[in-house]
Image 1: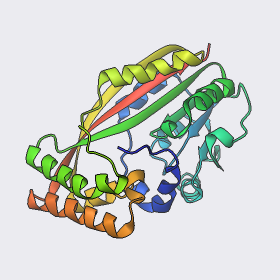
Image 2: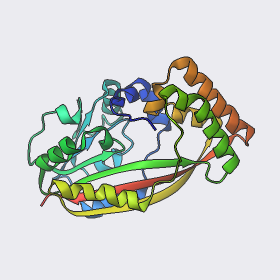
Image 3: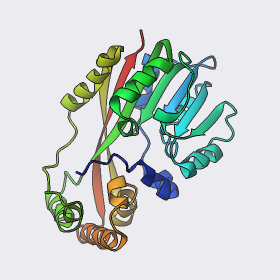
Image 4: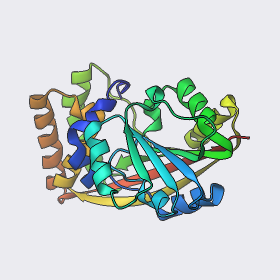
Length: 265
């Protein structure tokens, strides 16, 4: 896949679709997170890259003060409206790496499917500075793998990518695989390089079944799909939607969600 750095602006162009079609995260993930980093109304948390708020409500329900940082102004406003009943919630519009935040201030800093947009050294060092001693950093993300249960459908979707996606980016098709525990462990170990301790990780799994139209909306929220020139993108999406409809009208998405946690000593 192409390097997506610099495409973080794209999500702001599809804010409403992003909220409707992007999935949240399983309850088991939050159970693990709050066991590692208990929160109550005396705590302060920071969410990096709130997006459409898919990972926000479980934190707010703990009663803590939650500040979010979101680069997209439309996404930021969407979340202000979405969580307007929570008086201790606020959103700062801007990039995390450029936003002034007080040091030693947060009990929890977390990021859901967003921290990869922040340059590693800048991001980890800044998170370390703004956490209180004993505070926790958590990053988690969803890694979808489509049509594992239908090899022919998988193959035909990849043919559509070979016809439209890869030529547009002047790339050769790569071998696709599901996200592994080894990858999760490697990601968790990054925190060790920046002074964090007690690094832990966990994996969670689920299956989503989407109609052809729903899957089209989903891939329409992917940054590297949004930036394809419109006429090519529409033919590409038509091909995928038609393929799914020819194979029964639905597609199974096998999600692996990884959670990494570490603590400021």
